[in-house]
Structures are given as structure tokens and as C-alpha cells.
Amino acid sequence: MKLTFLGSESDTGDSPTLFSTDRGTFVVQGWRVTDAEALDAMTLPAHETAVEIPSSLLRYLPDQH
Image (cartoon, rainbow, N blue to C red; front, side):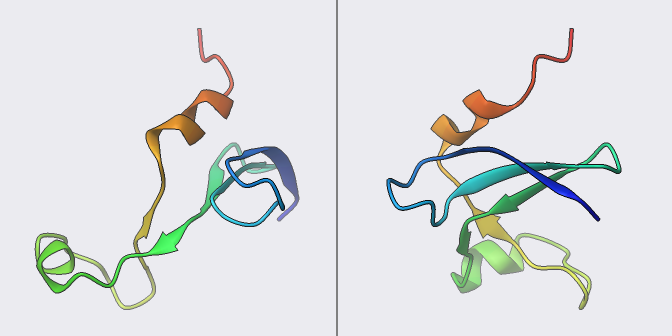
């Protein structure tokens, strides 16, 4: 999978960060969700995880019009 950097909310390039892929999908680097109540509210398969990002990171999404 090839990642293309779209933007970050970090001055150092750490998380949270948004990438597009050559598969027509996006990869989000964010803060791992560890809150038990939040995790219980989701159905996460063993091969998935949840990350939290600020809404301001979404400004880097390409316009889909």
C-alpha cells in the first residue's frame, strides 16, 4: 500500500495525521481509544482498532464533488 501524506495537526509531523492510499482509501493516525465505555459501544473485530482524531484533521480530505 502506498501512502500519500495529506495533512497533520501536529507541528512535528506526529499524530494526528491523514493519508490517502493507492487503494482509494484513507489511513488515519491518531490517539488509540482505550476508554472502556467507548470501546463497548463499538463492535470491533480482533483485527481492527479505533483511533480518535480532532475534527479539524478532516479539512485535509480531498473534495469529493
